[in-house]
Length: 106
Image (cartoon, rainbow, N blue to C red):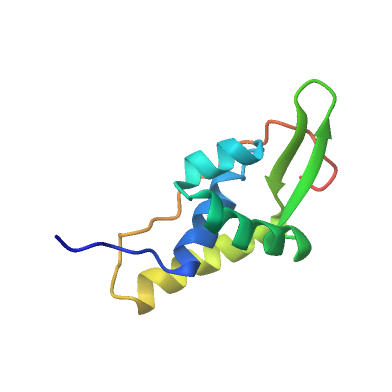
């Protein structure tokens, strides 16, 4: 049995896509299909680089959402992965979920 690993770009793109509509960390991990160790490696970098933003929701607590810059990076990743990896169609740019949380950066 061969094991299939995702590249770091696939993991980052999955996290950005999962956070596109606004979600808690555990939901992002689940939707992106990322284990805790990988999540801890990439998520803080995405926050620090401004690709994901923390949004405080009084009803739901801390939520995280992909910024416009993060959406642009996601689109660029998807285009590059499709063109250069020979995996056209393996990872598709999905329509991003509508934000669950209103935020001025939306």
